[in-house]
Image (cartoon, rainbow, N blue to C red; front, side, top):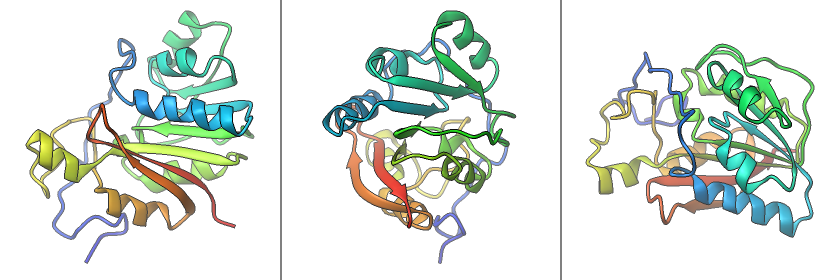
Length: 204
């Protein structure tokens, strides 16, 4: 038995997440996701990318600068991004952890890297992602079985990270994603062993 997010009955969420601000972060986390995105875009000759929940913008600006980039964030990151990288495009996403400003957006690729675990209702984030006209999505999130194996997490307890609402295993997350996306490829992180990411497109 699972809940509507394909987490096991008895799994405990963190219903009041802290708002995570990663203004001072560079590429300690999810570097592999952006390296993968760059290779995908280069191999397929894609030109534009939207990064939903881009944080400090460091990975977007430093790994994908050759492409047409748009970063989406909330305060205080959005003000930081507009000041630090004024020549790049930045959009305000709305209320942290809860709401998303739906606007007419399109790009070849959408990245949403380690955002969904922070969102109280991930279905709202998925609706926003599906509103974007794009060919590919790259979505990453921490992998709960890897957190249990390598980092001492208790399987059904709330996340150790107070900014996370819930964390999925690879198979649970694939089940959740497959409701609304076609999954083309799935990966475990190597340098960051608790990372999982998935290459997706909209279901036709």
